[in-house]
Length: 204
Image (cartoon, rainbow, N blue to C red; front, side):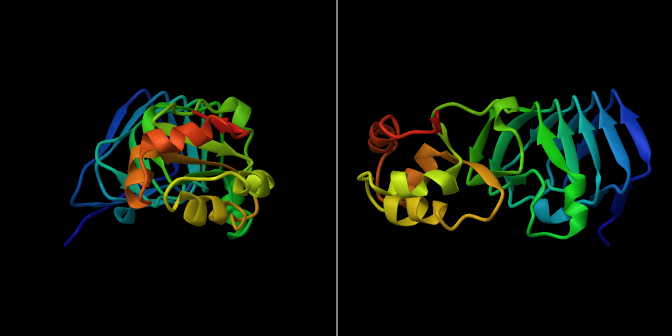
């Protein structure tokens, strides 16, 4: 039987906490990690983020961490390393009220690889984003129409740019990994960069 490991109702400070495979992990409710290192080796489906705080922590994804919602956790002053795909950061208006418990500010993703990741309801001026070959559309819904007027290589315009206008309420930024998305959409990272350098509100 797969063991369930709970971190709840306590403060963990200055520790290295490893979440290896072959267990199910629950973070929260009411847990605070402060100045700690959280090493995540388990897949997202084995990790449930209930509620809590991660303050001045380092969060390492040892393998690619996919489709994880961080909305219940309050992330402040944290540094992320590793590969994150399809992760959502910040609370989402479309979820239950409990998701408002979370948020994100003053976090550093410069050593992470983000792909298909979204930031919700947060001040992006406090977030340090990864640089090229990652790139970020700021205020994607607000700039979708303008971005759509540009000629994009391959299927990028039909898939990614068209999708920006249909993003959920509260999305303030979306980040992609150019080589990964280019391979899927019949183009190259270099061709994408040529257009990205001409459009507004892109961080790369």
